[in-house]
Amino acid sequence: MIMNPYISEFIGTAIILLFGVGVNANVSLKKTLVEDKSPWVLISSAWGFAVFVAVFVTAQSSGAHLNPAVTLGLAVAGKFSWSLVPYYFISQILGAMFGGWLAYLTYIDHYRLAEDENTVRGTFCTGPAIRNIKNNLFSEGIGTFMLVFGALFIVGPNIEISGTEVQNFGLGALDALPIGIVVWVIGIALGGTTGYAINPARDFGPRLMYQLLPRKNKNADWSYSWVPVIGPLLGGAIAGLTYILIVV
Image (cartoon, rainbow, N blue to C red; front, top):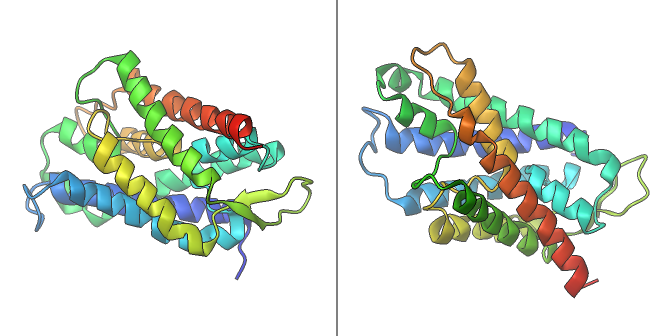
């Protein structure tokens, strides 16, 4: 069954954030069954498998970008229509907000017990282990570069969207597992510095949802919020340019 591509991007990004925020909440909040049992590999694995599920569900409908940095990287590489980029961005951000909200509802009793707002915010969005904006930007950029650069060697012209002339590339269903593995290894190898947003929608959508929650003493850390947006977009764009220079 083929969905509207924008609904597909909304649903796919929501799936990622439901599972991603869900695993963050599961290992961070009080009185869950895995409280204080939070190895980084568990979190990285959950995010990687979340991407696998989301790509598998949505690949035939929208190409399963599910990430503005991926959309931008494909467009820069000439493998996606620029006219569709803003609509994909909007769908992805709204999907990320919705997925974060669903995870919040799932763990709402545990969120009500939480007193440390830094922990609560950390279940929704990323933050640096050491706050050094230049290095934080580089960390997000290099992680996203590897994601988009790897994706460019996996994607194929497998979706047709009316009103466009470009062969729009996306992740076919059989390629869902490789992309999930790429996300998984980025998390394990490179994620310890900033929490590896590597996806502007993944960070901005849930951060905005956290801001909208009826909680006292909220601190969404908006002064840092641009880093996991600009860093991934730069990394994705550079990956697209690099692909053109060495392959096309």
